[in-house]
Image (cartoon, rainbow, N blue to C red; front, side, top):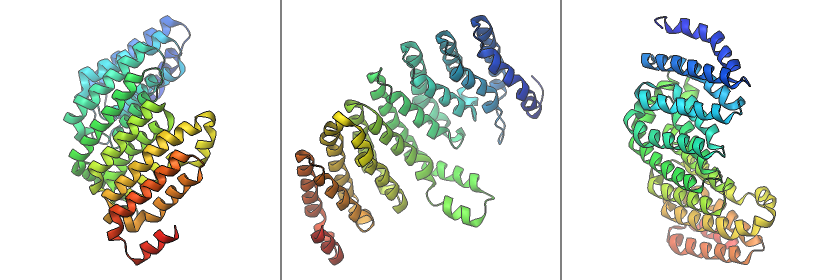
Length: 359
C-alpha cells in the first residue's frame, strides 16, 4: 500500500478490469469474494486520502459501478450499496473525486424496485446532503454537486416509493440553500478550473459560474421531475421550483433567466403533450395551469429585469394556452394576462403597449 499513486494508477488499469470480471461472475461466491476484496482495498486507499489534481479515487471505485450495472444479482447489488454506505460513514471527510462514483451508484440504486436497496441508498444520500456537504462543501469536485442533484432526481422519479420522492424534493430544496450559502466558493472554484484557458473561453465561462454549477442543476432536475412523474410528485416539484426561483431569483443574470424560461416552457412542449394520450387533458388542467400562474407570478416579481427581456415569450405561451381547446386552461391564460397587465402595466413603455394591444 506504500506505492506512490502513479504506480497504483498503472496497476489498477489491470487490477480494476480483473475486479470487473470477477464481480460480474454468475457464481455468487466468486462475485461476493471479489466485492469483499474490492471493499477492503478501497477502504485502504480512502484512508490515504487524495492529493490535489489526482483522481485515483474515481479509478478504484469504478469497478463498483461496473458491477452494479452488469450484475443483476439482488444480493450482490445490496452488498455494493452496503459497502459504499460504510465508506461514506467512515471516510466522508477524505472522499474527493470518489463522490461522482458514489452518486452514480446511488442513481442506479434509485431505479430499483427492492425496498431495502432503495431505502439504504437514499438514507445514505440524505446523510450526505444533510450532514456531509455542509461540512465539506469546499472539498467537492466541480461536478459532484450536479451528480448529487441528479441522484436525488432519480429517487424522486421512482414511482414505487412516493414518500422517498417527496423527501428527495425536500433535499433538493436543502441543496439550494447550500448553493446560496457557498456562492463565493463556487465562483472561486470555477475561476481555478478555467485558469490557463484562453481569453475568449474565460469570457464565455466566467460570466455565470454560480448559475452553471449551482442553480442550473437544481432547476433542471426539478423540471425533469415535473416532466417524468405522477401528479402529486410533479406538483410538489413544480411548487418547490418556483419557490426557489422567487427566493433566489434576484441573483440571476439575463442569461440565467433566459435559460430558466427555456426550461420551464418545456412543460408546454407540444410534442410531449400530444404523446400523453388520455392524460393530455389532466396535464393541461393541472400542471400547465399551475405552471402558467407561477410563471406570471415570477415574471411580475422580477418584471424590471424580465420585462424587456422576455415579455414576447410570455405572450406566446399565454396565446398557446388559449388555443388548446381546453376551457379551464384558456380561462387561466386570460386571467394571467389580466394579472400581468394590472401588476405591470404602469411600467410598460410605448412599444410594450403596442405589443400588448397587438397580442
